[in-house]
Image (tube, rainbow, N blue to C red; front, side, top):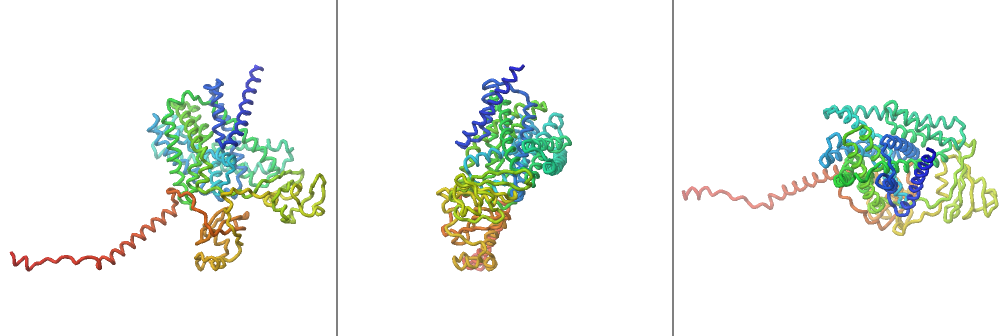
Length: 629
């Protein structure tokens, strides 16, 4: 018995270490990290090294706990401004998008596999949710800076679509296991009511649970080493409590993290570091267990239809669902195309595919194996192409900040304050003489091993270590002063234009200098307001607006979304790759109106030209005909 404990611990630790080392390969070559984790699990499983693991209940239990940890961290790290910016499109994708994907995929699965309609839709529900964690890893590994609107949409969608897919999957498993054959109308009604109850209870428990976490952390004077464990345990309690009363535990734990992460919770720096590490561990454990549970020797029997289903999901089902969901929103076609492509399936889909086995369904293993192959196809095809497609569609923007040498410390008794230690980077604004705000005067400066007061140091120099004690809402502002110059790719050297334009200047001056053809109303605006209006009321870092012969580029915006820096280019950039599909509702309406207008113009023109151009109609020669008769 004791020997077995040592052996199991050794093998488990070795698998985790191997998965951690595989991340170095992924960072080096931009490989999908999920794929590496799953391959390690497959290589050590039944058909690999021979480790026997066929406990579906244990796999589902461990995967569910790991997913709860990941969702809490995801919510904790999602800022409210990202939620506000992308709430509409993301929630549409997470609800209607999941239903559309389930329906389209299930309809095709019914004809490619020997499954009933309910079993086909069950398979569709299992693979309907995306795994954005893999996408964000690829973006970080490739040093890809996406536009904030696109990144926020993917983040919020990934955090909110899992609970809905889980509800659909479990509901269909219960219906099939009970040998029920409900009418379509009854099935839709029951699912709709169950969905509202499940999501509603989950949302209530999650919001109040998040508030309770914040209150307890602030009230209890726990040791900093115990505090992260306390918060993690409370998050799992929220997850379990919501599920126990019939709500969505996964939605509850995500919302609890969202509430806690966007409040003035104590020791936020310590919590973020701990949860980041726990999220990595949870992902590794979940992917390894799911890889161990699979049996690759069973894949060849269904390989062809499963691969075809994976291709259908990538190239047909997901794009159609995304297009229909995002049609009401005025998003550019390249962004819609990218969101439709970045629909990677991952561990959640495999985890949900275990539920038919738990329900004792006859085709449970077939559903699991098919979902596993679909996930592999998604990771192989989509996982390697995220970066190139983002560049092709023009969604990459230069980094706003360069490297930053910074340490954050939270001192005992300093509620909502932080001690920041910066190392002055060469080329940073403070190294070039930029003044530090009065509210952030350094408490101490170290130079060449000597500590001095800031008042006695004079101008800061590269290499100085600066210690600043500030409220926790200001670090983002200081980062801009102490970060080095952002390294701009040679292709992006002229990204922000050759000239700087003051956003507060009048647009009439722009008209006088470059004659871009502004209307009388637009000339009364400031240049910043003009750009914001042309962008539909919301400006984002690196947005571009073409006005006649010039192009205005947003160089920076403040926390409220107001433009604080603009660039002007007299040589507008070449258009990005055109996307012939993914028209929004506004574009479709404009095209219909334009078509009708042009048709009316052609009709009027033809009606006006007909009398002049037409030859006189021949008249019957009645008299001649009568005379001959």
